[in-house]
Image 1 (cartoon, rainbow, N blue to C red):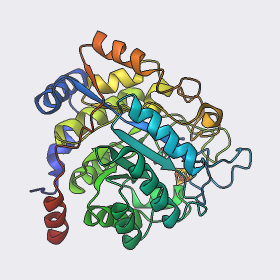
Image 2 (image 1 turned 180 degrees about the vertical axis):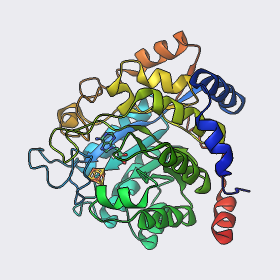
Image 3 (image 1 turned 45 degrees about the horizontal axis):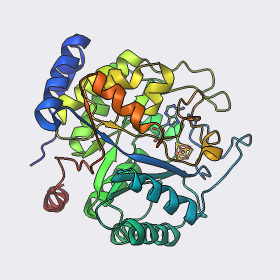
Length: 345
Ligand code: 5AD
Ligand code: SF4
């Protein structure tokens, strides 16, 4: 059963030498997931968003973005192409787009299921919805949901997200768990006013939420946002947080994220060496890629995720890892535990 994290333990953890932390995290990862790196096919299905987050290039207030949304056929067709190549997990990610209401997302999930069956894991990442909507999405075939809390500092959270509260985000994460999802969340490294205390609290919240998946990455400053002059997050700090997460949540799936690869060449490999075990190649049709810029310099704009699979496999094997196309369910996940976890909250 999950217990709230011991803050003293985390405070101690974050101050340890980075190479020592990374080595320990690597050995924890190996003990649970061996040398496997799981592949998730990412589809960025809409870049429209009603939110106005200060850090994000897709914020409502950025009028320079060419807005798009994929058609149902483009989404289902892309999933089918990935499926034919052996991929068994797909992530449908988008902004909070009223044109994609829950009925429409449910319909596309059903179309996908009718084409590729039940063997694949379908992950959604499309923002805050009601508990009832989450239940409908789960019934329509979604298995996992990603909703980062971004920062555990309630004041900074509200300031950077146009008054939307951290409490609401955390409540949504509990609703997702109750709906039966494998739940993913996480934070950015290097947001304004971040202190060691923030990092400790970020880690503590990940543990307290009993996350099955944790996505983190460095903040990267976007010129068309209010944070245009704020420095980017540090890769060392991101690697440190990755290692701490692996040690604190040994059975969670932790992706080596695009933001890390975009900030620094080899950034993803550094995360993989420090406990991460997932990669998310981009399967979004190429003509849309350049329009899904949460931050500038995204390094997956031009490469086709499917054509890239062989390169990824060779690269991983060169580093002593094995690429796995299987579902790679979180070892931390069990539907009954979801139920117990919520009842004891
Ligand atoms: N830099 C890095 N990550 C960002 N995200 C949004 N904007 C940025 C940025 N400027 C992250 C947020 C969001 C996820 C989809 O992308 O954490 O939840
Ligand atoms: Fe919208 Fe997500 Fe960007 Fe916020 S971070 S503006 S919710 S796409």
